[in-house]
Image 1 (spheres, rainbow, N blue to C red):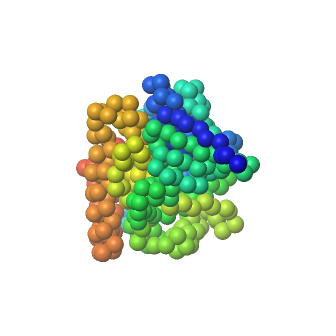
Image 2 (image 1 turned 30 degrees about the vertical axis):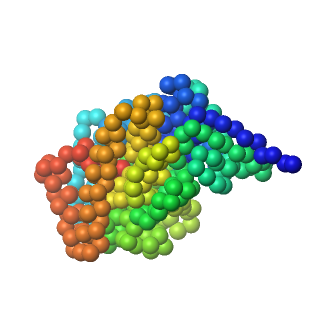
Length: 354
């Protein structure tokens, strides 16, 4: 009889993205045995559709300086009819290479004692038993005391719980060679509806992309509009390669007995802006803390969910009343110009980080 190898661990994390690695690292630092299963190869861990922006109040403070590609004290924000330059003494937002960030987080997790098994695709989840297939075709069974789903917007762990995923939005990113000096945000309803476009300078490349919530426009139309808009801004992307992905903002809980969801798997991204890295890391650490101490409060997740629900209401109103969408964009720019709203109060809600 051919028996499949069986491996037991205290904590099994599916997905080596920022949320999964943050969760795994904290658990290992508290003496828990943790295995992370990641479908990417070791040399491509961390790769994902992402503009690579990290905020001063978010990740900049914990990411080593040598990982920062560019930092910006100025942000250029445009709407249909006006613009504003937000300027501060310290960098507001910096850019990082998503793959480099992923490798750094993976090393920190492994240094803490986490075992990361790459090139391994999860094919089935049955309670706390997971079936996985390696790149060489070897099938293994993993069992655990706690299972953490950090496997993105199309989470298999989430689906195994019978939780649907409805609210998702497409994000498209072109990473092209070249350089520019301004970090730009474009709230242009003509091209992006109630989504937005961006131009983010990196060290030797430029991230140019767009995001829009579900119901705003389909991926094909968003891409077509992005190409037209970028050309008008002086960037011909017609022959450049792009990456696209769906971003989930369909939160329906993160704790389900001994099974947990973090980041996009939990649907914690912002539906309005697509921001995902920071919510993933925060939720990963909160889940780890709760596993370590079940009495630990999850206030940070509750705060994110409260903000997300507000974003849902804005999306719903914008979908029903397009003129309202334009009014919101123009009002936001005006309030920034008059300094009636602080850019830092918008940071977690306005950084495309998936």
